[in-house]
Image 1 (spheres, rainbow, N blue to C red):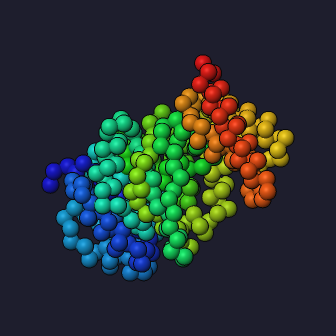
Image 2 (cartoon, rainbow, N blue to C red):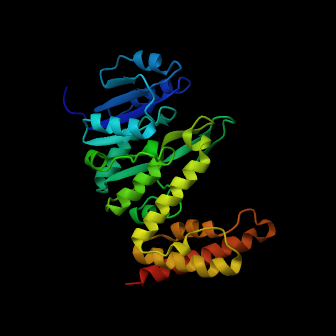
Image 3 (cartoon, rainbow, N blue to C red):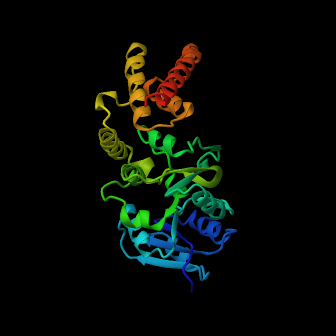
Length: 308
């Protein structure tokens, strides 16, 4: 078998309800030169049986008798990958049929190290689905790392050497993706997000990120502090809810510093970041807080352009 262009990596643990659809969404891709490696991480339900039922030659199966955890599973999969590019898809999510084709084109045409995609967010309990709100440029994604995880892990594809050089760090289950983006940003990797909805991301009660919120928040805070410190931004400016008079000073200063460190940030990115300094559900004041947000965002973008 010739070397595949893309290795699609899928860790699986107790996902018998969803994994068949996830596997088939990859096997039915318009781009066909790939390998799909599925790792059953010690599941106690029918997950292993479902994985084993597939006979497609592009599919490799790994069965562990004991659960090793998500970080270990991701790193094991990366070590097995033979493709020039690595793509992720979680075993409870779905890939659009043209995902690999369009994402590969985007990566290569923009000379990126890795990129995610816009995506659908499906609330499994209610069936409601909505579009994600992604930033697409490298500068905006680097900026958004200061407040959130701007790449959806199961939508990510990148050069294989990027993931083989920088592994997911143990102890970060539930926020291992955010810790990875922080480290890759500090290493100078170039990011992007494809402006097409190329996966469906399921939100359900069994996800690690849903059941370990306190731990996840702690990991996020630690990694964000590391990122801001590496950028030379005072931790006292860290985005958080502040009263009007306080946030005008602190929020404006934070955005000014961030725009200096990351040239090319858009008004939209500044707008989203400044919202983290504001309180939610402002009632009759909503129009005023949105106006405030927009004015600060425009000023920060303009001052950032003329900072050098």
